[in-house]
Length: 304
Image 1 (tube, rainbow, N blue to C red):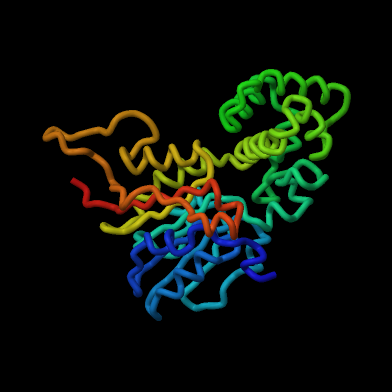
Image 2: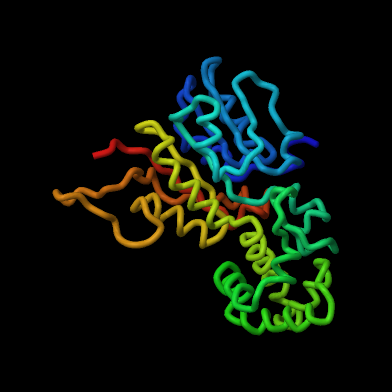
């Protein structure tokens, strides 16, 4: 399978350009996927440059790049610092992250990511993980189901939907996407159902893969990893992610005000570079999955 069939990279030139690549630098692509961003980075490196990439999905290994300057690490990027230390790397010149689900993951029915196919409830980025969508839907208590649907899908009638899920699963387990879709469909009009299902699936996927916790753990490691002047280029796809990225770049924290030193200088490790970047109309037409993408770029500044 070609990389483009596996996944069309979003905001490719903008995100890679945001790294301000030094040809002999060390870079990290923490969300390898189809390898589109990684290939673009490699194209700007000379023989002394180095690129490390991360992906926990074994399907992504088929896209690995035969290049002495490249190394693909099969691991969750929440452990980026630890794995780079294994390779003798303490500092890097740039880090790129694209938090979107690959087209391949949506298009393989048995992965259970898509509302389009009838498949077992799964949604695990790493098939070796124990927690899948089946466990979330069939075993979570009401308050946890409400939290997921309310906070991650941002749907107001979360309690009603959770109650119906619990009512149905009491009769028999909810095993497939079609069974789950049938439970959700009566709550929304025909015009809204696909959008609402997509949001609920996204919410369950976030829970299954601990995406919010992973994002926080990753961002907290970036200041220590980046050289002074090193760049962080991050593509988010929903408001929860983007809010965390925005706050971390602004304040070095996920909530609260910026801390300042005795002289009133902000105690922040990163500074934003440029404004928020979103896909062009042309890219949105070419790749519908780019529509919700938001790119933020930051630079590591000297510690006070």
